[in-house]
Image (cartoon, rainbow, N blue to C red; front, side, top):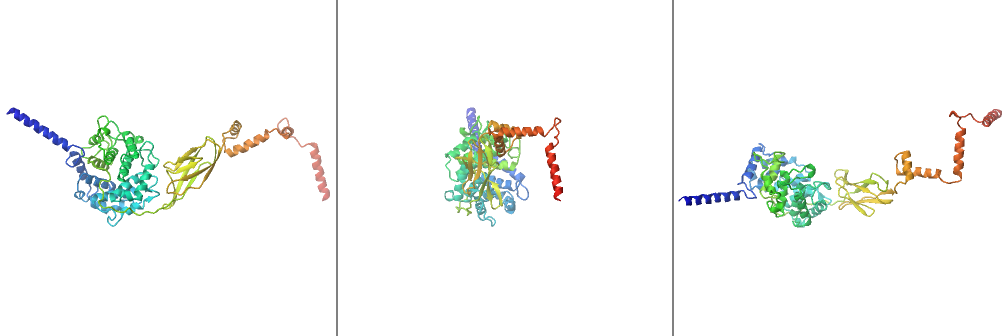
Length: 494
């Protein structure tokens, strides 16, 4: 009897262990404590008007609730709050429109007619010069593609999506990552978002761009399994960065718990599992640093539920929104028009923002000079050093922008020893003034037959005009007689 009881106990224990392992297997659901506790946190922090945190965080929370398989209508007046407070959306800011479209689709609503507003058309108005939104930013292009795909736009027939894809590819950094800004340093958050956007647009996950992006992301993983965002902000892994990386891995069809994504025995899911606070919210940084916990928790829930962006896609295909094609004027300027070999000039390229009625820096512009091409940074600037004398014409170009006018720079040879002596004598001056003084000195030091005579006469004159005490001598006697004679003659003529 005892052996049979022992067998039953062993089998029961094994069965319970299997059930527990199944319940805790990734991805997680509302049956798992980590997701249930996170959703309970949303409930506990929700205000009477329906908001969870602020307007932006309420939209991210709604996406997380849907990702977990929950009905957002069960969360009080959350949907009513989002509908009734749309004035908080900055309709001049592409990322606000994009996040709102993703939220509307998660609600099961139509973003082309949500409370009477066509947000897809609004996003289409943000498309200009081959990219979406602010030309100095990249994140509005990542999320712009994701939002359009979520709304039902077919990437294979969309000019907006295809040109934005090229814009994203053109702005991938040499290290394989992407930045928030054009020309900025790479970070894991934006690299993950870029990968999800490219995949949503139909780019093959095995493409060079995406593989290089993942290589960059792997370089930012630490021994906890988590990922840090940007080395300039420190190398502590964060919930937000790790969650977006997990979503990007999933979008590429990979497993974030696999050995490929394991560092020192820990994977990114392990990291997130250790980041939940007692109230169900997720920390921002280990060990116990909280910052905008609603947002941190939203990102974590979406990743832990095995979802990526867009969380939901419309089942109805729509045409891409209309947009206006224009080529803004550009201009190029440098801080110097004349330099010497080895010296640098700072070049700035601007474009005319007709809508804002001002000239704005143009990042990513190609500055062509002397057969070389230079690319402007996020502030529309680039430094150029000349190695050969000559007259150079600088021209700026960029796709979807008009070519700039020419800017001419003269590059003089390096200074000679004579010119260096002049500069020490008269101080640091412009090349033009040094050239004038060099010419003067050369004429004074020339071997002309008149030079000794002039020097002698000047020396003699200087000697005669002063006495031994350094005072001016009286006029010579002959000049005095001439002066008297002139006076007498003037009186006689009167």
